[in-house]
Image: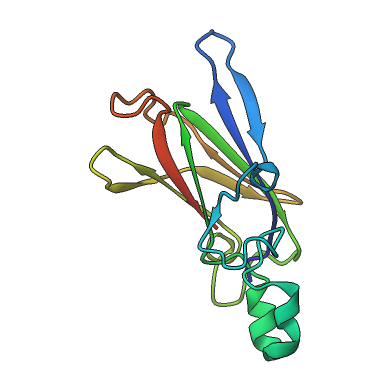
Length: 154
């Protein structure tokens, strides 16, 4: 099951010939950027229920509530390259009936000026750290000064 412990987004920014990678940790944001999560003031991570709920739900529900499935991080960037790195609380990335990309992977979508989501295909590796790399994405859209909106589904 997907248990995302830490997500770092790297955005390759800059107009110079030597682009700099800027790392962004969503857990360090001034405001919560993790969406589809209740009890935001009580949860400091990628769980779906706060610690106080553990005594009120069945063990199976509590276990599933610690998984990040269903959560999403929204952000803007004008970068053509994005890298996502994270570790999980489990060293088993796959299940007998589901590959690692479905159990421990992420999905990235770009939102255009009409609000249409477009899937972004990337390269990935599952080692001690899970890594997704997206290169050659459209950059500098004319409809928003911050760039395209992206949605990273955990």
